[in-house]
Image (cartoon, rainbow, N blue to C red; front, side, top):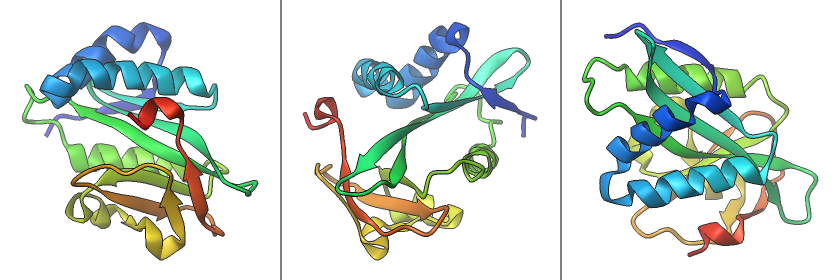
Length: 165
């Protein structure tokens, strides 16, 4: 496996991030790149992480704060998660574990992601409903998963309108 240096993203990383997203999401790449930019612009407290090796970005994860209806709590939305699909030596599991450790240092109560139980359960994610979290959007063929960092009261996660379409 390639040894990765994981660090916060910088504005000058945007081109490489877009390339990673395009490779990961292929046909949906352009829309995912657009959404990543909108999420980054939505909240200055977004946490983006780059994994680099040999001077090139190999993985990317963006965590964006979202409100929970009628609560002072906030959750972090993990999307996108992008990996260099041309480099089979990238250790996706280690990257995800490392960025989750970095996020656990924050004051946010939870991290949420739409995906499969099989992919996210090994990292401590549960079905969001088990933590009394629900969403104001539906995503076909995906389960809302949540990782509790600090005790949460739960509630309805308020997604921005641009994610509802």
